[in-house]
Length: 295
Image 1 (spheres, rainbow, N blue to C red):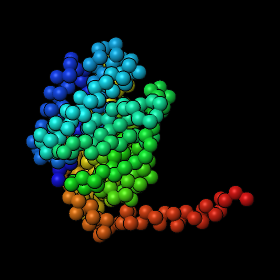
Image 2: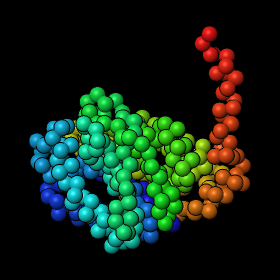
Image 3: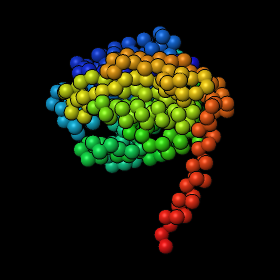
Image 4: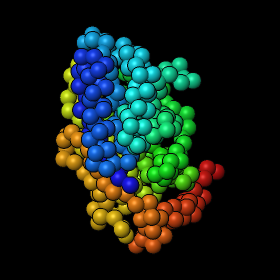
């Protein structure tokens, strides 16, 4: 299979037809290059706030509600494109209403037969907590697909190893890491996290960021990143761990061919066996816990 991660620029859109045309073109180009699984970035959907006009897009709260207003059309369009091209698509994450009092940050996975499910971001950044008031999601899930078992770690979530590990222990072979980061430092944190998750779990991680300026929406006004696909730097994978990577802030797709058998092989025969040796950490930590136990 081929996996495609988007470095996606946000545009001020004049109408729904412009969004439809843009997304259709992006999906068609990736599918035309043979991609089977397409990954769009965190908060890539915030460009839909522009459909409410400049004043709405410039207001943090109003922008959330404008994006959510288009959710049914967004779902229908992704289902249409996934069916037309016979691909799986992780749509750009968007604010969504859940059981929480405030919107969550939700990425939805679509397949050729329709919507498969969604994953909400688990751990909020300071901006999401302190300024935007985005609620954390409740729980993780692994998606069973013909392409393999897939987990989603949205942006900041990629920096927390136990989240990815829970997905891997539930069978995930491929982790999708959509992101939206303002500065180079933020992008680097997610990149380092994504590469570390690929290393310690001996799996494939696709990192799809937003790129470029969007000064009309303060939530996503600056975007820095490079789309990439990572694996463990070991048997059957590049020595750098980088299967594909675009230049920094270069819009487009990073595409790599992924072999699930290679994931199974490196977990079984690699020079190191991080995936299998994970639980040994607990054994090594027990003496330390005993020494620091309160009296």
